Length: 251
Image (cartoon, rainbow, N blue to C red):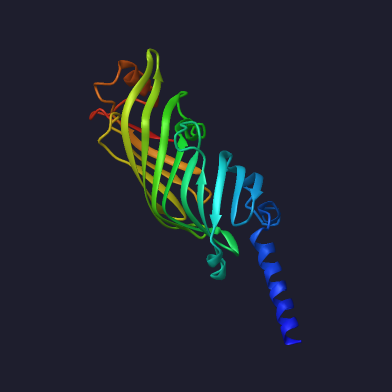
């Protein structure tokens, strides 16, 4: 009798383990309360190793999102996943690689570290109102040392770079050199600070709220003499330079 009962219990446990191990990710995602600014399309695979054809965050599409979920993290009440998304070599795609850690009870409680994010410059500038249309090329790269949102910014240590920075000119693309930034928490949101040296003589302080919406941009710039004359001419649309040659702006 005991032997029969043991076999039954073992069989039930094996069945439960198989159900959990091979549970379709689409069934789980369909029952999760996903934030309104996130949409997930084309989910396949299991909850442990799955794929989404596309995830749209704040209107920005991220293609071919793969994840590898840690079962042990669920015991701690969190969801830990190693994520690879997009194509790192495609300048037109948003790409991400790194670990992401969510609270099972609050998906806006997010942690990450040693992660990298790439996104096209033109998609970012599309959401910024400038005095004149700017057709810029290249990608922004963000390297995250540590990030914690719950859901406001609690800790952020990251650096950013504008790779292959170009702006379309009348005679073709203009090479704008390299730009580096520091990212940190400021209030409930995020601050992005750019400092010289760079080709534009640019110093910039941008603020994003806890929903990653751009709320303000302030700074100054002074184009290098080596840049084409049309750059200095276009800069006049931001206002007249001060006595020191710098043009102040606020967006």
